[in-house]
Length: 114
Length: 110
Image (tube, rainbow over all chains, first blue to last red; front, side, top):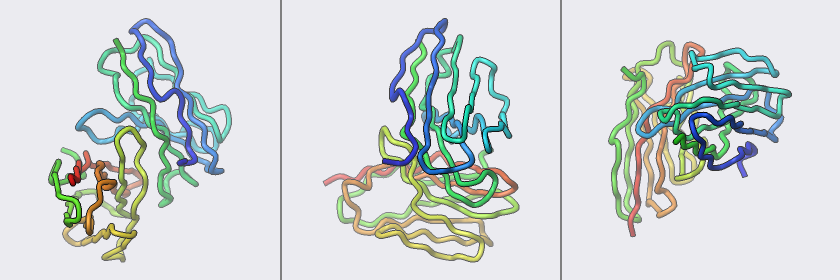
C-alpha cells in the first residue's frame, strides 16, 4: 500500500471516447502530480497541483484535462486521444511542492488508445 | 539531451551477486539526488535521497554514493535477490525541477 491509489489500473479506449483517471492520496500531502511514463523514456511531468491550485502545466495537449477538487483527489480527464498517448500514467503526491520532500507514487493506470 | 543519464540500460545478474548502477547528471544548481525502485506494474518507490553534503547512504542492501563535484552517483546492490528485479530510476532535483533518468533495468536470475 503506497498511500496513493489510482483507478482504473488498466484502461483501453478508442480515440473518440471520453474517460477519466482517478487518484486519491491518504498521506495528508499538499501537492499532487500527474506523470506520463512511456517505454524507454524518462518520466514526463504533466501537471502539478499545490493546495488544489494548478501551479504547473508542461505544455500538455488540451485533450488531457486535470481536475483537483480537494487536496486528496486528482483526476485526469481524457478525450479524443491519439495512439501515441498510450502509456503508464502515474499520480504522485508530496508533502509540499517545490522542496526536498520525496514523491510518493501510485501504481499507475496503463492506458491503451486504439 | 537528457540532464540525467543512467548506465547500463539493462543488466542480468545471478542471484547472490553484487551490481552497481551509474547515474551522471548535468542539473545545476544541484539540490538533491534520489534513487527510486520501480517493480513491474507498480509505481516507483523511493530508496534513498542524498543532498550535496552526503557522500553515501544505505537502505538495507542498497547503498547509494554521490560525488557532487563530478556529478555522478551510483547505486550498489549487495547480495542480490530475485525481488531486486526492477527498474532503478535516478532523479535529480535542482533549479526547482525534477529531472528523471530513463532507468536501469535489472533482472536477477536464479
